[in-house]
Amino acid sequence: MSNRLEDLLVKGAFFSGEALARELGISRTAVFKQIQRLRTEGYQIVASSSGYRLVPRFDGLLPLEIQSKLQTERFGREIVTLEQTDSTQNAVRAMADGGAGEGAIAVALEQGVGKGRMGRAWSSPKGGLWFSILLRPSIAITELHKLSLLFGVAVAKSLEQIRVDARLKWPNDVLVGGKKLCGILLEVSAESDRVNHVIAGIGINANFSSGWLSESFSSRSTTILDQLGKRIDRAALLADVLLNAEQLYYGATREGFGGVLDKWRSLSCTIGNEVTVSLFGRSVSGLAVGVSDDGSLLVKTEGGVERILAGDVTIAPRNA
Ligand code: BTN
Image (tube, rainbow, N blue to C red; front, side, top):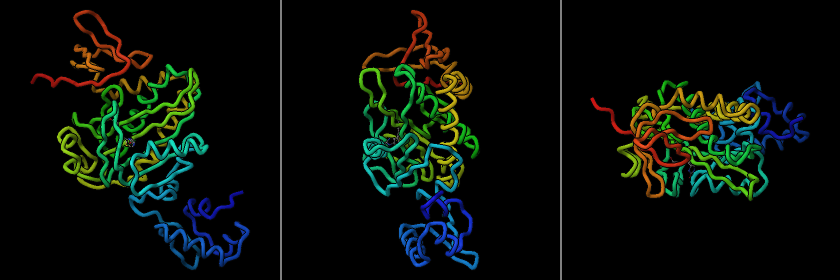
């Protein structure tokens, strides 16, 4: 039985003060005090003759507002929302160190020191959907990089739901019309061959115009607002990404990554294009001919097919 007011209100129904007091084993005055506390935290809770009801604000990203839209079993069942933080990656690391379980997430309205892949910065102004999720995967270390493909697929599927036609650039950039709309960062904590945890950080350029991004990003990025000309409900998008990611993740841990890889290939804008892949000063140019079952990119060069496990891909513009 639930014993938190939050767990009841998140169901979205009306609850009378009397029913809440009974259910929680506290007085009606104590119920009222808790309702007031939640209101000061920013929640909109209406009171009528039918009782109290939580009314999530459009685009509200407080934990209960997100959870009222969640259809997952584990992902997002523990949420911390931060108005400002350096990076949600650090926030989730602290949660992991404090014993948080798989699926715990931190969401930030704004990040001061957003982290990108390969030590780069990630511009994270207000209006974006910046979050990280804690995973405690029971898969081999060699399989871990496939998780980044998995999150790319989850985001692209959710964008499709809101009519944003996204494509995937290996390994995990989500592009629309050749411009980046979402980036994914995986940080792994492991000892010898044992994985402690993985923190998957997802940054979706949502309710701001790409002109708000710092200069180095704005010309090669796009946002949902740029694409749709309107703001979306980030809580609904987040709930959908978490649902897609959870289904793909538990599917992959049970049955392997075959389904994820097939879906990734069908959403790819990398395969079939001339690419240059750079990593640590070395670069390989050629035709991207596929993604193999281990998640590596296959590039056909003059010297043969190269199997690339990590790197930064640039897709050559097609000749008109
Ligand atoms: C990339 O370089 O493409 C990866 C960008 C990942 C950005 C997200 S935003 C939420 C999470 N917190 C961070 O500091 N980075 C990731």
